[in-house]
Image 1 (cartoon, rainbow, N blue to C red):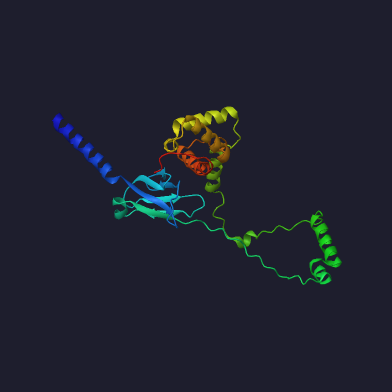
Image 2: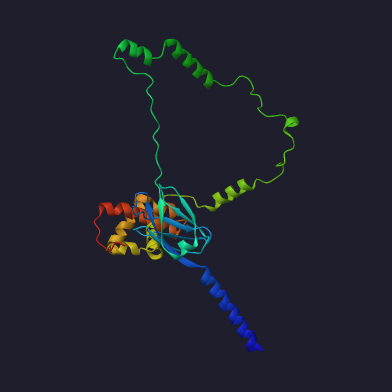
Length: 268
């Protein structure tokens, strides 16, 4: 009797394990710009499965997901892309195109074209003495204290109807207040705090992409100091240490660092 019971338990465990392995698998792809250029690093988030990764220096990514999961692609300065996975995208790599956010410059209109006649142009641009005096009087009036009570700009309760929110707790306000209290205050890091933060980064964050470019320990230390200085890492993240976010910041800093420092290594 005990042997039959044990066999049933083992079969149930194997069935559950197979279901999990069958449901979750890794998808892969590449993130590019609208000009077919590589884009890195990009934050890839599985909204449904609550997982996130960063693409490598060539824009390639790999993340656990299953069919119908919602995947989000985020890059500073680019429009966000949300994608719901299909069966075809589960079985084969696919490309994601991120478009750069346009910066619109407001149009400048010139209402008056100078004629070259000094007297005429000076008359157009200079205010009359009456207008200057009027503006001065208005400014003095606006700055002066009120001599009469201001009427209460509210609607009488007779016309407002019943207030269904009366006596109710503002849950949204309470949530925001709790959220502000939970977040640590951002303060400037001193020498010891910065040193401890960078030591923790070296031990907990994956810095393999630096070693692929032929950087030794001394060069990695120099780069981390550069990244901390340009991205204010210790100041922003020493109290709220997030490995994924810090790795994302390091790859952004490395993109600028590699432009001014000659590195020899393996590029993926």
